[in-house]
Image 1 (tube, rainbow over the protein chains, first blue to last red):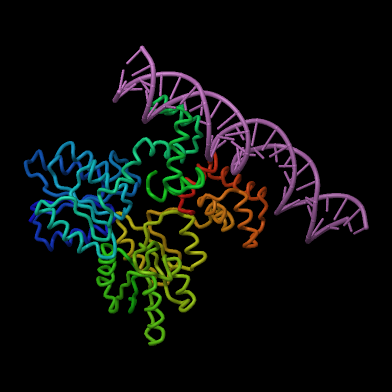
Image 2: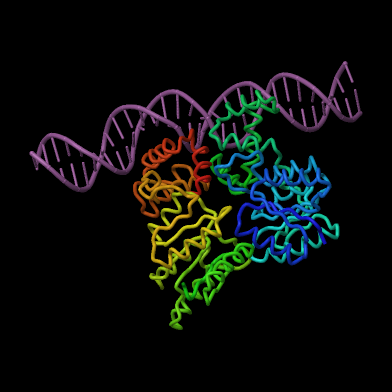
Length: 222
Length: 222
DNA sequence: CAACCCATTACGGGTTTCCGTAAGGAAATA
DNA sequence: TATTTCCTTACGGAAACCCGTAATGGGTTG
């Protein structure tokens, strides 16, 4: 079994259960952080000391509070970790169940397993840890059942997200066009942006921009 | 200390910790349900058997899955519980931190304490249980610091929420007007609705409807 | 009953979205 | 080089919005 595991989870009510699972699995060294920043620090320190972690279990969303932080989400933490310790195995344990976001975790951040917090997630997490140890890949908790070949949601790219984000901030087409020109994002004509919004509306079956942003919020795209 | 406590919480990773707190507090009878429906059933059953619960600790949001349920949220559960057992003490333990929603829990549903899930929430929960037992009222976890006299968010009433909900579903002004006429909600002229939306835009500093709905989503109003 | 108040509704013009069509321009193909 | 194709941008009219102002109509007051 793993020898040294780091848990990044802000909610104490949850981390208690996660640490318990690791204790059950006889992991000798279990560390726990409540902030992403602390997680990165610990991983860096462990590398310097030549006693690296061999597994990271991380949440995605972390509450913001009085403390200023560099990394504000699990995605950012994993991205930073990949820079310093690409071989570290990573399990994400989060409430998120939108296939769009989960897919990008596997494809862009190279995580080994994704377990969604639910009614029976602790046993799922335990299994995932064991399977990750046996070098299995793309492990998904059983309540999530989308296929990785499903192209639909991959097609929504960062360009679309940018548009949705600006729309959600009250920008009108012209503002978005100017913003894109400044950031030299193409295409940036009002017409092209309009067309792209149209595609999104068709895809999400939205009646208008207001409806579209409401849906995008529900999907966690913005 | 309380003799019989019911915990309504879908995430197993969290309920483990909550039950542990109750065990620490030497509560002799601790029951746990993962669905709101089951919670109501248990409370009814306990009344019939003349062995009622004296505390309910409930989450607000419950994941939906294959199982069909009558009650889909903690609010609905508490509303139903108030019908059958108004004297039962109630603590809400949830991630929600929007003052608007929390206030209505105290004012409309008569809960005794609200604890927001966070980095040190287990100790807060423990304290809240003890204070509730001593008949204290309006207990709030210390990371939440809004005053009950703050009128700002109370002024947004259900009429506004209705408008926002319909907007978020892609309705245009005329549709909303018709909808309101059918439900005999007044005022229902497109002009009046428009004016009300205008007020909301000023209040929330929104540039347009799209922006407004994005903000409303962030505030958890829809 | 008339005068007034207030909330609701109606109206109108400017702006933005919405949606179809078409023009321009670059890369690929023949 | 000419043609095709695809992507980007431009244009224009209808619909929905945005926002100020005016009309309506029920309730209260003198």
